[in-house]
Length: 515
Ligand SMILES: Nc1ncnc2c1ncn2[C@@H]1O[C@H](COP(=O)(O)OP(=O)(O)OP(=O)(O)O)[C@@H](O)[C@H]1O
Ligand SMILES: [Mg+2]
Image (cartoon, rainbow, N blue to C red):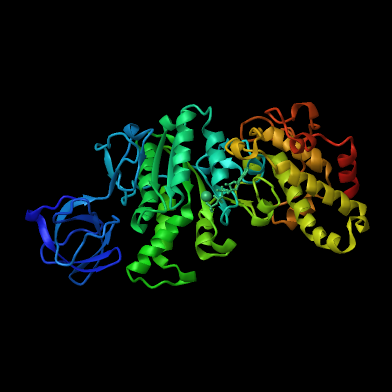
């Protein structure tokens, strides 16, 4: 920031890490205002808070050039990023500076710490289902326009690859789509790869990217989220657009805030996190809301430190999400992709009103079978599968088929697996599951299972003519149509071809027997 001698307000009086204390002698700068340091226009100092006559500032740049006694001036500016159509196809850091090779965008700047304000939240009746083409996501965590979905998992379980696949599937072919990508505290290589992929597939021209990767100072990492949110708010509020918002990784946002609060000497409380961290997180999540004007649909990768799902930061993030897709290390090690833990994954959008009666009932049935599978696994380890009752054995077999069915090759992982990616419509997914577990309305124990697993399994007969989300009548009573359900893209691999085909009567038969 440029130093202006006529606006001098004081001098640096202490330095500790990236915390800089400035003794204010003149007019007090505002909080969040940027200060200029004499002879060092490359340094950005942001006022964080006041301690008596001292402004406690954060050095946003990774430069060890500051010394005590250096003169400081007001600039009247706050951290701002460019917004609007000129930013499409571009890559910025949290200070709004370009990271690609093109010129910076200097008009239409918005301050990143000032939310545009939610005038009116979107009505819930406006829910619209989107398809990701990933069987397990479309089935367990419906991807609803304007809502938030989290991809939660420990290190290396496949969060980034899954997020990339969702970007690939959702943005490809979508007319008029607009995406904002926010890279926080992750690998620079991954950001670069994504940039190249988006460029090759022509999606880049409708995407704005913000990065503050792991090499950036914590203050910059903590600002990427708000910077990207500012860009999203502009498109939502001023241009009334629907935005897809991807973050990898939102946990790093919390981590950066924690580093700052530790450096500023704030007292940590819950699990080592300072309460300020959680209020900042909530502020950011609130900015990513949908309003009557436009929607922000977000996919957020969430790192779990030490594979501990009960970490207070992971819990705080999960509370803000509509759907939480949990990836598990044990499942990833068994080679399943995506490595989704079917029992820990939850969604508040998996209701008959959103997904329709047939889908909802199938989900209840699948959860029941998977729950049984978990308990049977231990018994089988001791007595063997042959000792199970026919009903239990049938459920055990169905569970194994389901696990195989949810295994799917990714487009973005083709270079890793050598297999082409697969895309499934929601109808294909439901048909495939129905072929394994049987039609939900023929399974009499569905109600008790639904009740057992916390869904509102009220006694309600199938309502064939109840309209579903697309406004078309739902058809729960239709028999599965084996010919229509092979995977969309040949060549199909064995799991996807075998799973959707109803076994010659047997699965149905056993399912019926078991009820
Ligand atoms: N769908 C997939 N198909 C094949 N390989 C995969 C798939 N998903 C993940 N992998 C393998 O797992 C590795 C780790 O995946 P990824 O980078 O997505 O993990 P992550 O959860 O983002 O890790 P981190 O927490 O370190 O960021 C990949 O490099 C790849 O080798
Ligand atoms: Mg990752």
